[in-house]
Amino acid sequence: MKAKGRYEVGLEKLESAASQVLVMQRELAELQPQLLEASKQVDEIVSVIETESTEVAKVEKVYSYVYSPHRIQEEEKTNKNKITGSQRYNGRSIFSYEI
Image (cartoon, rainbow, N blue to C red):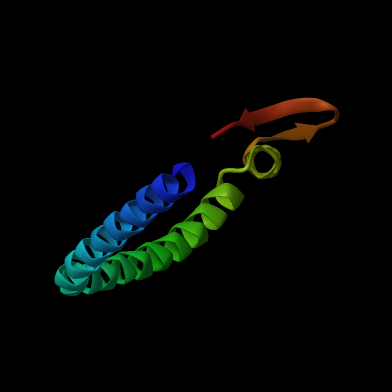
């Protein structure tokens, strides 16, 4: 008797699971158009993000070059050497200027 009871309970559980699967399949079929639309929107957003990421990477590369501390220091040294100077006559400074 015990075996028959377990067998019947098992069959009931299988029938219940099968009916739940049918309900979920219907719900999925009803939601399919919405899922497809959402998937298209996600693809479009991903495309925009990829494009913008590429553009940002280009700007970041330029910015990091232009404003890199090493480059700024070198440029300041170069500009200081070009702009600052003095005129000497017999070892004495005649005039000096700095811009």
